[in-house]
Image 1 (cartoon, rainbow, N blue to C red):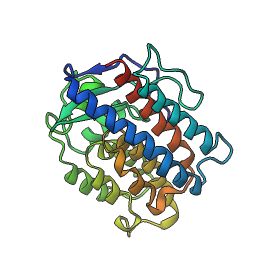
Image 2: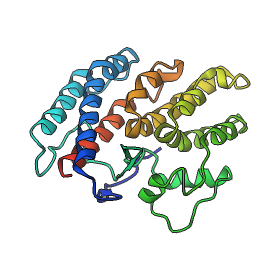
Image 3: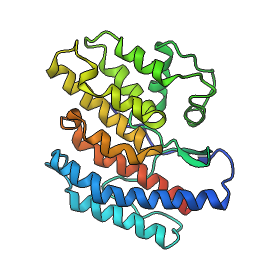
Length: 253
């Protein structure tokens, strides 16, 4: 699966009040601390850094992002070889908490098509950031129902793409459903070997969605039996890209 493509301009759905920015800054600082203290050590035990930049490089980058926030930001976030640039995103407040929609690794359009394939209508002409921001309200997506439809999907070769396209939706909006969906025990009718590969792939995409608005649930995701696999090495880079997007957005907020 390819990345979402070159960055587009960042947008806020509405101007953010100072209190919302301060709350968001505090959350991102705690997320950077969680990245260094918990996620990167766990990813090391999962073999995520074999053949590429190691955990210390990611810890150094997370620390630099924290320093950038502590200095009050700058005109431009310094480039990083680990996660170049930032992602297209939209941000909005819901129930007093800033929600993020940094575009997912698979892109938003395949996710929208997958939702349509699973019977959830999408209004025509809705831009990808707006599509993210309006889930689930405007698009009528019930994530419990979405999980049920995925679990009922044929377990042959047609399972991988729907899971990978819809996992970031669940990670971003319904982390408990994402965790349940990616548990091997939810799929007793699927042979273990192909199932592990498919769920490990979907876990990567769920991690990117979860890094947006439920970063604190990532340790639970990485504790799943399918967290170790052929796609695990992509997780730190993608999660770091979401963090860089948040830092860049808040630095200019």
